[in-house]
Image (cartoon, rainbow, N blue to C red; front, side, top):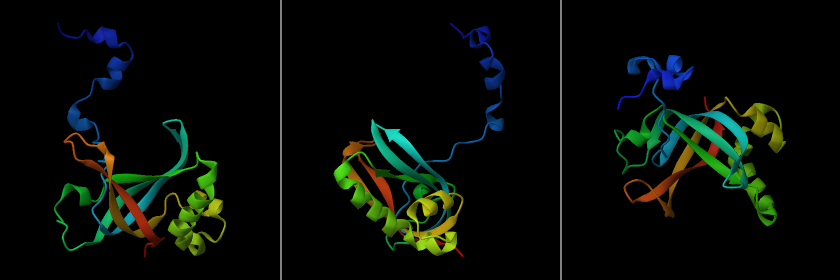
Length: 162
C-alpha cells in the first residue's frame, strides 16, 4: 500500500524535493596513513555511551603524501571525507594522561593561536587548517558491515598548514 503524503504532515513539504537537489553527506572514513591537510571543523564535548568525551572532527582538505603502499585512488583518501577523534574524560585516574595526549597532539598550534593554555588552543583551533600525519588503528572488538575490524584514524604532529 503506498504511503499517503498527508500522513507526513508538515514534513511532506520538507521531503518533497528531487534527489538531485539534496546535497550529499560527506563520507566519514579513516584516511589511509600519510600526511594530510585538514580542516578542524568541530571541537565539542559529547556524551558517548554514557561517557564524557572531547570530540574533534576533521575534513580532509588535501592529500600531501601517502605511505608508499597506499593507493591514491582509494575512496578513503578523497578530499572532502570527514573523520573524528574522541578523547575520553570518564575515568578520573586517566584524565592526566588524556590531557598529556592533547598537549602532545595540539601543542604545535600554541604559537598560531597565541597561547600555551590548552583550553584556549582547543577553543581557537576550530576552523583552522592544519597539516597532520595520520596513522590507522584497527579495533578488533568492533567490525564494519563486511565483518572486518573497524579502522580509526589517529593524528600526529599537528601544525598550522601553510
